[in-house]
Amino acid sequence: TELSKIRNFSIIAHIDHGKSTLADRLIQRTGGLSDREMSAQVLDNMEIEKERGITIKAQTVRLEWKGHVLNLMDTPGHVDFAYEVSRSLAACEGALLVVDAAQGVEAQTLANVYQSIEHDHEIIPVINKIDLPAAEPERVKAEIEDLIGLDTSHAVLASAKAGIGIEEILDTVVERIPAPKGDADAPLKAMLVDSWYDPYLGVVILVRVIDGTLKKGQQIKFMNAGTTHLVDRVGCFRPKIEQLTDLGPGEIGFITAQIKEVAQTAVGDTITDAKRPAAEAVPGFKEVQPVVFCGLFPVDANDFEKLRESISKLRLNDASFSFEMETSAALGFGFRCGFLGLLHLEIIQERLTREYDLDLITTAPSVVYEIELTHPDPAGVTKIDLHNPADMPDPNKIASISEPWIEATIYVPDEYLGSILKLCQDRRGIQKNLTYVSGRAQATYELPLNEVVFDFYDRLKSLSKGYASFDYEQIGYREGDLVKMSILVNEEPVDALSMIVHRGTAEVRGRGMVERLKELIPRHMFKIPIQAAIGGKVIARETISAMRKDVTAKCYGGDATRKRKLLEKQKKGKAKMREYGSVSIPQEAFIAALRMG
Ligand code: GDP
Ligand code: MG
Image (cartoon, rainbow, N blue to C red; front, side, top):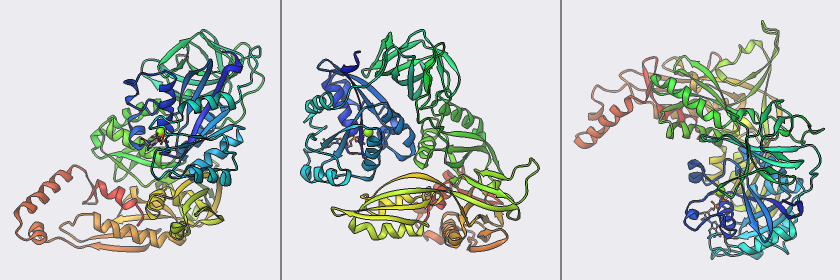
């Protein structure tokens, strides 16, 4: 395709503002799909994505509109996948900024729009959901001008759901978004935007060609990975797969090259011609590293092999999560897994449970700590990355511990501000900025990542009745007064529940933990002490009293049905219990205990 006829754009929006619905409409209007095929949202194609209403993998579709080729890139919608978002944006010249006409600008919108501006995008505001009675398009336009400084005179008022404004959006894209630049005669230079595993095609790679031409049968080289491959397919999605002979400068499409694992295809890598390579790689390449770690153990020890196979299969399609075998005194064999964030963790855990039918115990999520040792260890190392609180060295050998910090942007209506500020304070937050615009506050805080990975987001949402939004980026490591807190049940340490905490909050955390465990662990025939300890020092304790011989008689008097139900429940629960020094802990207790009150 001629460069002047190409338009590459993405859609940026806060979750639920209508990005997927609009994308589907654009596909439908340009003839990519029949009405029947439209019944399901096409861009969000994973079940979990559909349920959670967020996009996890970027997808792109090629649309034809009035003699132009429009490449629409759908970007992931969550902070955990910020790097993928940045590469998708780098592949485009413009963006549709979709804002819900009833909700207005949210934190995620802001974060993405600033990135879009950094990529020099031409931004077209789309005020969506104007069909809603609560829609206030003029107020939202003013907000976009005030907050982002964008001219909204060419904004499109739309309803993706009702199909209003769709043609106007397509016309505006052609009119306003600049055509890509590129040199057809230069050596091939293309950016690897995304990749995923397809059972029929193998690894499918989404690319944006910058210079030169990418052809079927071409020998290509990945500049960062240093590997070479033979291109066996070139094509695009409409959204159905269409094979092409080549992709020229400015074009977005896919290739396959008989690659077996997505781990070989790093997002952001530069693809060039093996024989006539480009002089320089595309800037901005970054290796993504997992930031949140936890142990995954099968409830039934016999499921270990099944867990290994399932994790390996998932990893085929997601190179950003890592795993290695781990043994725990109490939980037996399992895996230590690394994730981009808590949502990523939940997605993997959910897929293992749902698609592979595994019952799992998840241990306390932890960030990666940097530990400076007082003396080199036998291998001569003085600095270690700690992924697992269980591996914490003897405190006498530690010179310092550092933890990762983030800068968070929180956007919240005034009325909830007080409780949100308190939440940040409780989580060791340092306020950097606080501004008010049209009845809302924007707070910027520096926070330890460790304080955020637990249930910060859930708390934020519940304290603000869902109105607060949150976005963050990592800002590096800082030394902290950090200690390992162990939990002992019946004098036995439960390694799955040990965690690294700040000394100043240890007592509160320890107290909360033992109190919750007291509620969660069923009574036994004997008294069970539950303790939180730092080193040898107990900082909180509770005791579960022994139960009488006939528990049901005591609890429920003579009610026979309730008694039977309780017994049945206990029987069912049996399989999902874990023994700790002759104490049974139900599986749910682990997850519940990790939530902070
Ligand atoms: P995304 O998270 O930005 O991809 O949002 P979705 O496209 O999944 O839409 C979120 C919700 O808003 C869904 O329930 C849609 O049906 C609804 N929605 C999207 N566009 C409109 C619109 O123009 N009007 C109304 N009333 N609802 C819409
Ligand atoms: Mg969506």
